[in-house]
Amino acid sequence: MSTSVLVINCGSSSIKYALVSERREDRIYGLAENLGSADARIKGITVGGAPLELSIPYADHEKALETLLGRLANYKPQAIGHRVVHGGTSTKAELLTPEIIEKIREATPLAPLHNPAHLVGIDATMRLFPELPQVAVFDTAFHQTMPAHAYRYALPKFLYTEHNVRRYGFHGTSHAYVSERGSELAGSFKQGGWLTAHLGNGSSTCAIWNGESVDTSMGLTPLEGIVMGTRSGDVDPSIHSFLASNLGWDIFKIDKMLNKESGLLGLSDNLSNDMRTLIEASEQGNEDATLAIEVFCYRLAKSLAALSCALPRLDGLFFTGGIGENSAYIREKTMAYLPHFGFKLNIEQNNTLKRGTEGRIDQGTGPQIWVIPTDEEGRIAKETEQVVEHAKKSESMVSFT
Image 1 (cartoon, one colour):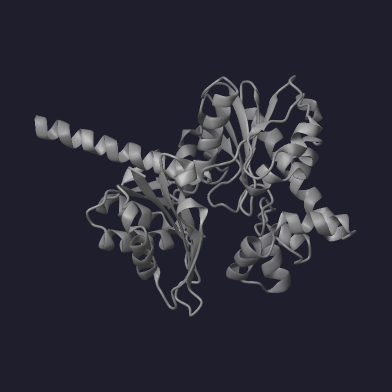
Image 2: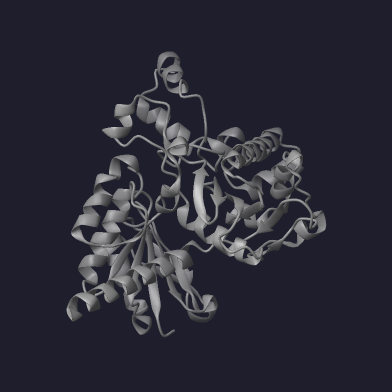
């Protein structure tokens, strides 16, 4: 493992990590979870695919990172790439400087559940490894190519100009990777019009023209858009006033309900937010699970149809994410709602693709349909390397002059 980048994604009580090198099969990855509690632990995969489980009682983010890097001492990274959910209007990954860190902090009102945790991780790694270049890779950056008619809300202008209320979009690293990889496999690298469907506990869709995002389903926050594991996706904005007036709920209770108690979980009457569980329950006759699946697929197809308006030409569709990559049933059910686009699903081929397998699942006529396993960590590592390399070249030019 000659060169490597440590990719970090900090949550409020967890750290998802990956040590990414040239060969994907050499990747070391895992999750530090339950941080701050007696049950804090690290679970992951180390060299050669060997499992790792390590108890780190009451460890905070800094202690967990220190433990992780101690275990990775023989594979010391050349840089650290931080996944940051909200970068405001940043259009690319940025080398972490006091100015960029402050920009992340300023975007906290737009991502109050995510950016504070990222800042904790950044603060810890900057103290632990001040000699390493560190880069922020923003979920929102890929979508900053959207035109104004796609990102502006029909609200009073001052909310946009003075308070930055607009659509930003998320899952940018996934949509960027999948569309790039998929268009390459299709023989039209970063060319043409493609739809991407990133489907997991968090889900979103995107319209991409010549390699650039032109519209996406998520908005000011990751709550907007299609049905997700526990997030509602699009609802009538007046639901807030309805619940406040009729049930006496405050804004915090409503926000919690929409983000953590809705989506597949809410539709299935709290059965599960895991699509595998819902499909199994549906097969056994559970009507709530059946409805949850139907709503998920219908809203997904509806979003893809709407986003096609952003494309001068529709060349095809890429499925990705845990559900998109592994559930032939969901792919088939979704495509059944889109017959008027000329999609022709190859049922047999569709049923063979799961567990990280990429491939084409259409019949060879009409718009193409692909399953492309996402690699967000790989994309973050790549962007981190590019930023560090650019910074080194800039320093060399300054030194030379």
